[in-house]
Length: 380
Image 1 (cartoon, one colour):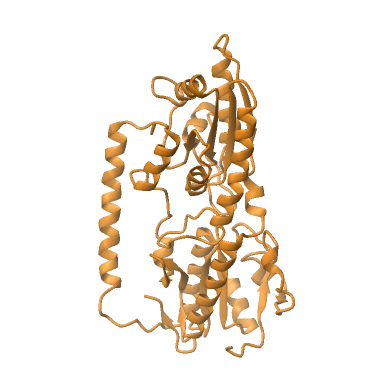
Image 2 (cartoon, helix red, strand yellow):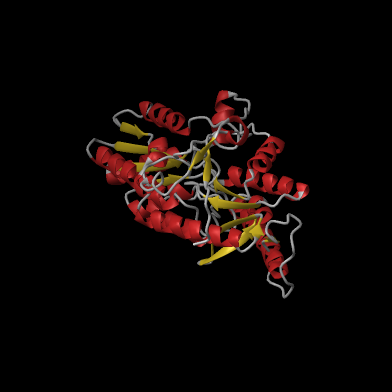
């Protein structure tokens, strides 16, 4: 419709701008792309040179860059946009939110989340079958969620078979009165079996203490996680070894990368198309430095700085987490003091958000950008 004659793909993530050749993307080549899992262009972690990327954009004569990925990718896109703007290049930089973790701030949902929840439910179903089939059976499922427990939370609500959901945002403790091990014992006595879902980022402080582990980082600067699934499995087994005449059968299921690698479901396919259309129309209208996504049900152009200033996390004093606790009938594993502190933090965040919203929703006109991208305007 817009008369674009050349679309190219960058292979291997950000480093591909200057370390790989571009791939021509024709309608024929991408015809069945939505029927495949993973990424056709490939991906990489960290270690890119922003100056070299922008040099490549300039040398290749690229005037629109669409960057697809999660919170780390969007931060990278923001840095590239700032460099493009500083140099005064005629190039629009647009972000498209794609991550199964759903941890991108401001937006309603990221592309890939619905599919991940659907696939996670299959693993939970398998754990439930295994747990029911044995005396005092425990099915333990580890799901993705480094800092945010959205997949675990929504998969738990969708399944209805989960007895306990553990996420990074909600601390838990094992030993003593009101602890996780006591709860597991009670649930097994009541029901004869149980299913536990744990996000990969849950309980990291406890594991690090028990193993005297020093924090290390990956290529993107993320803290390397210890395996909470294996650690929790061993702790449960050790606890019940001390209980005479209380044998358990524990089955541990770790489908983490299987969940990420499947093809997108119908809901995500529709959502992906809408994101693509909105991103394209925004760039063609002359906007730059934005991520496109629905906010309160309406597609919007959101400035990079609003997307990257913080990470989206489950608010455990909010209604959705209360629904999970109601569904599983698990305790919150928190003291009254912990809950009050979290409410106070949430109130501060809400006040900050409302203040920023007032500034954004004022009557002032859009600010003209300095990047000269076909008369480009900054998203506000």
